[in-house]
Length: 163
Image 1 (cartoon, helix red, strand yellow):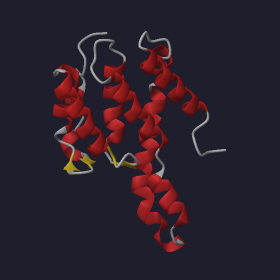
Image 2 (cartoon, helix red, strand yellow):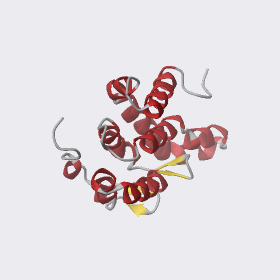
Image 3 (tube, helix red, strand yellow):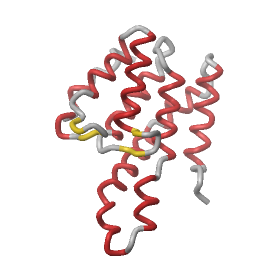
């Protein structure tokens, strides 16, 4: 597999935003999640969730860029917080806050949601691009990881709230 997170510097984090403003701190949080002990890793995943999926349903511009790194960590059996990582990825995939708001907005205001709707679309696409990892995690020896991966895989085929 190689060294985890080696592609972090390839992302222009300073040009992206998260729920707190600049996404420049996201690489440090991802590194903390990857390399710190369990307690610090839990703090890192909590802070990451608050920055890329605020309140559990509001995505940010940087969310799509974080997903491949989260999935990379979820794939490593020794990683801390694999369940929490998959819970976050699942929340990202199911979120349609901006699209739903745009749908009910007055016609003259709908275009003001376009950028944020694209954040959701890009984030879902990033999750869907990780389908191979998700499929492999359905066979994980950790029952909780396998169950979450199965649910996420089901959601990729039939997203919640969509017919």
